[in-house]
Structures are given as C-alpha cells and as structure tokens.
Image (cartoon, rainbow, N blue to C red; front, side, top):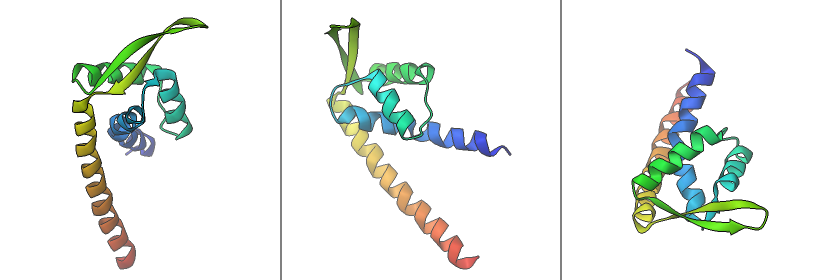
Length: 113
C-alpha cells in the first residue's frame, strides 16, 4: 500500500467541504481559493478546482457572478446559495461527528498499545 496515495485520497475526501467553507465567508475568486488551499497544504491545482466548482454550481450549492477587472478579463466570484448553506451545515455536523468518532478510536488505541 502506498502512503502517498492514501494521503491524497484523504485530502480529496475533504476538499469539497473545505471549498464550501471558504466560499461561505463571502464572495471569493477561484485564485484566492487556490492560494488558501495551497497555503493550508491541501495541494490543489486548477484542473481539480474548476471541475469541482462546476459540480457545486450544477448541484445548486454555489452561484457566481462576473465582475469586471481593471487589470485583465472579468473575474468570476463564487458564493453559496441558500441550498449550499444548508448543505454545508449538514456536512459540518457530519465532520464534527467524524472527528469525535476518530478521536475516540485513535485515543483508545493509544491507551491499549
């Protein structure tokens, strides 16, 4: 089994959740999302982010608007829809449950080793 492959799969599993959290803070440009994800060591490339944003839009979780830029082409800014906000709330509850369950298991194994 390859450790690096498993690590990549773990990151992919929470990427959508992290992106929704970033967008939940307010309108955001994709490049800013990439920068934050990269800074957080959630190694992401444009070829991963843009298809995910499209899936989130098609699912009705996010929407975007075009904003003219003084230094280039118009920029697409994303924000959560009401459906997206409710979806993120459900994901957050699941995330909290997973953290709790994982800590119960990993902390138990430490005391029994």
